[in-house]
Amino acid sequence: MTRGARPRSTGSRALFFSDPSHASLMKSAFLRFDRWTSSLSMAVACLMLVIASALGVFQIVTRFVLEQPAEWSEILIRVSLIWMVFMGIPTAFRQGAMVSVDVLYRWSPPKMRRVLDWLVCLAALTLIAIIIWWGWDYAKRGGVQSMAGLESISMFWAYVAMPIGGLFSVIGIVGNLLDPQRQELETAQ
Image (tube, rainbow, N blue to C red; front, side):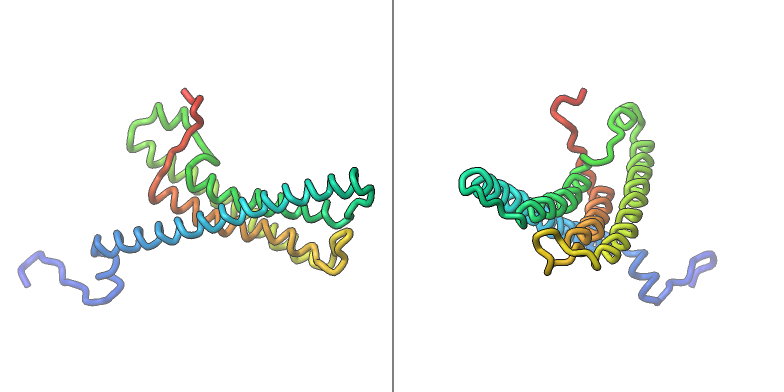
């Protein structure tokens, strides 16, 4: 070994983190996982919208045409809308459309933009961590309640949308940090 040269570490940890190709592989693997989870959460959100719409039409027909309203349809519409919102949020985070500091971003130099990306990411992760924590607590507490008109189904299944949507959101937030997609409104100037 020459004088002043650093000894090479043979440990797998040092080799793994010092090799840029491993970091690139990890990033691309995470982004593939992110695309899969974003697609899944958006598919669930769209399905919940379809279910809520169909149940809304069903409720109108039974209430005003048949004059015998289905009591259970109203709660299922509400639950479907809750799931739709919490499963749609991860896609908004992934596309960079949820938490945005567009004016600061446009006026900042490139190095400051990356700092802003990290600050927005940390703020969003903090908020989502709170939603996951309290959402899970709320779901556990609501587990003893039943849905009006559907007494055999626990309210746990409605409230668990918060922590599940939060977990999908964490993946979307980190995915947006690794591969930013700044999708602004078309009217933004």
